[in-house]
Amino acid sequence: MGYIGSHTAVQLLLSGYQVHIYDNLCNSNIDTLQRIKRIAGKDLGFTYGDIRDTQKLTAALKENSIEAVIHLAGLKAVGESSKKPIEYYSNNTQGSISLIQAMQAVHISTLVFSSSATVYGDPVYLPYDEAHPTFPTNPYGHNKLQIEQMLHDLAFSDKNWRIACLRYFNPVGAHESGLIGENPNGIPNNLMPVIGQVANGKLAQLSIFGNDYSTSDGTGKRDYIHVMDLADGHLMALNWLQENLGCHTFNLGSGSSFSVLELLRCFEKVSAKKIPYQIVARRPGDLSEYYAKVDKAEKILGWKTRRSLEDICTSSWNWIKNSKNN
Ligand code: UFG
Image 1 (cartoon, rainbow, N blue to C red):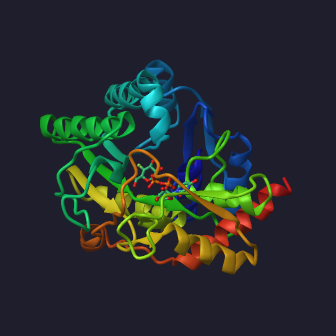
Image 2 (cartoon, rainbow, N blue to C red; image 1 turned 90 degrees about the horizontal axis):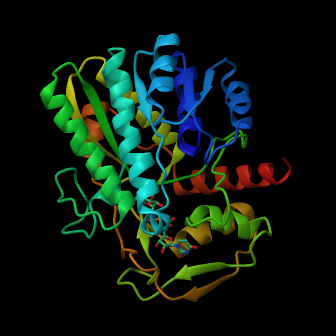
């Protein structure tokens, strides 16, 4: 029930699915469960457990008559993955094997997997389409690609599987209620949570990692996607899998990119807050710019983003203001 899972659970409940969450709470908070219930006006189940505990996971799938799984149980900090690779291989890769074994034990064969645009690595061309070569450059990216490859092999070996690998671009924003949003443990690494902490006074300023990239204003450009659009993407993928077999990969992005300064200005505008910043050295491993080609998800799943950069900043600011009072 982390950042993406909580928003996805809301959209699933609102569209009539019954939801059961399995989580070890390593990067989430049990309070979120009540908040999901409050927003959706519906109940949902919860089991505390680790994805690598195959027995417990199998029992949870069976006892709750689960029919399909959305797998979001991944560690996700790129920098940390280089410092603690074995934790990442264990939780992400081994954890996914454990999940597949549990699903096989109770004959569940519908799976939506949370992958990442990080699998592409340095752009050979832009926008990245799903056929772009994959050259991940860190353990986190290696995990995502390994899991995707494993899922393709699985669907090839057993034609009953229905799998969607969703390659997210940069998820940001929050539910419009301000009740759920991104709440990283410790000092955040990602741009929007850092801006949020500057806005609410927890951090003095934003450090912008380089202004000498070959972009319009020299700062890095990314394809930011509203987490509610991303949640809708999971719902559409799950619906589509009801009618389709095999393992399929989709980019989930907006199809355009914004610079660090553009995001900062937009946030300043909607919040009426000044966000002080300093320009510092480039962050190792950062790319200049990338964004998604989104035609495949639009054509096949009937999904595309509906929310703007302004919606992203407004919802983030709403969440930040709200969480300060909690
Ligand atoms: N940035 C700053 N200062 C900060 C944080 C970020 O200038 O304090 C800049 C970065 O240099 C980059 C942009 O803001 O240009 C976005 O950086 P993020 O850390 O928010 O996101 P990344 O693009 O580095 O990575 C994100 C996720 C990964 C995922 C990837 C997929 O963190 O998990 O998108 O596209 F793999």
